[in-house]
Amino acid sequence: MARRVAWFLPNRAFFSSTPEILTLYSFLQPSVFSLNKKQQQPICEEPQKIPTCPAQHSLSLTPHQVSTLQTTLHKSLITNNTDEAWKSFKTLTTYHAFPPKPLPNSLITHLSSLGEIHNLKRAFASVVFLMEKNPLVLQSETLHSMLCSMRGANTAPSAFSLVKSMFKNRFFVPFGVWGHFLVDIGRNNGNLSAFLGIFYENCRVALVEKLEFMKPDVAACNAALEACCCELESVGDVERVVGTMSDLGVRPDEFSFGFLGYLYALKGLYGKINELEVLMDGFGYSNKKAFYSNLIRGYVKSWNLDCVESTVVKCLNDGDGKDWSFGVETFCEVVKAYFQKGNVKGLTNLIIEAQKLEPSDIVVDKSIGYGIVNAC
Image 1: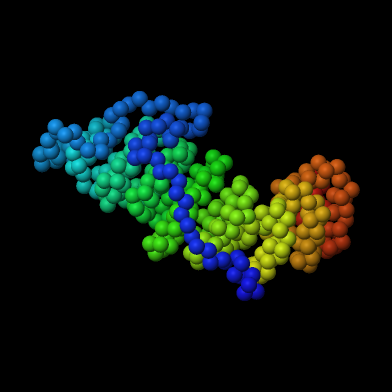
Image 2: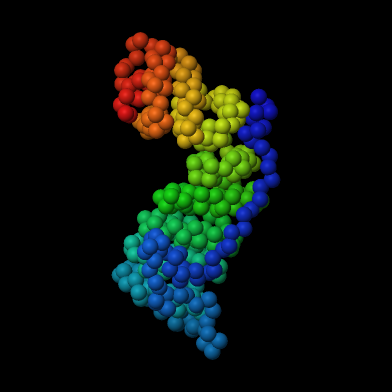
C-alpha cells in the first residue's frame, strides 16, 4: 500500500516552463484582445498607450497640477466621464505622479465594467503598467473584477497575458483571485491545456517562495489533470501534475481519480487502474461510480468493448447489484461504440449479464438495460 501511495504522490523536482512573455504593451496587438481568430479588431487609437516615461524636454508637474488632475480624475469617475478620467490618469502616470491608491483601482474597475473591448484594453494597459511601475497601488479585488470582465468578453489571450505579466513582475496575487477565471476561459475556448503553463509556474512560485496563498485548490489541480487526460492524452504530463499535487500537499478527490482512470483506460494501462482502485480505498472513497464511468469512456474511445462489458459487470459486483445510475452520456457513448462496431449481439449480452447481477426489485429506469435501451 505504501508503495502505491508513493506512486500516486511522487517526489518529483518541480521545474518551471519558460513561455515567451508578451511585451508590456502587447495589448496593442489585435490578436491579444480578439474575440476569436476570425474577429480580430485593429487598434488605431494611439492615445490608448500609456507612456512609460515623460518626454525628455518635459518638466515635472507642479503640486497644483497634480492636485487638479487627481480631482478631475475623481470627479470624472463619479460622473462616468470615462474619456476624461482616462486622460487625467494618463497625464499623471506619464509624469510618474501616481494618484492615491483608490483612484487607479476605481478607474480600472470602471473601465472593466463597461462591457466594451475598447475600455477593457485601457484597463489592461493600466494594470500592466502599474504592475511594472508601482505594483503596491493595485488591489486584488481590482484584478478579480477585471478578469471577470475578461471572462465575459472571452478575451483569452489578454487574460493569460495579464497573469504572465504578474509572474514576470513578481506581483504575487492569491490564486483564488485569478486561477479559476483562467480555467473557465481556457475551457470555454476549448483549450484548457493553455492553463497548464501558468499552473506549473504558479505552483513553482508557491513552493519556492513558500507562499501558501498561491497554492491551487483541488479543483484547479483537477482542471490541470483534465487538460492532460482529455486534451493532451499524455501520461507524462499527467504524472507531472500528480507530482505537483504531492509536492503541494493537495489531496486528490473522486474527480482526480476519474480523470486518471479515463487516461489509463484509454492507454490500456490496466496495472495503473488497479493501483488507482487500491488508492481510492486508501483515501476512503467508497463511491466509485464516477471512476467507473470514466473507465468506460476511456475504453469506449479506444474501442475496447470487452473491457466496457467487464467494467459494467465489475460495477455491479462491487455494489452488490445495486443501482449504479450511470449518466445518459455514458450510456450513449456505449451504445454508439457497439453500433459502430456492428456488435449488437455484444450489446444484448451486456444487458443480459447486467440483469443477472441486478436485484429483482430494482426500479426499471435505474437498471443498466433500461439505460442502454433508452440511449438507442
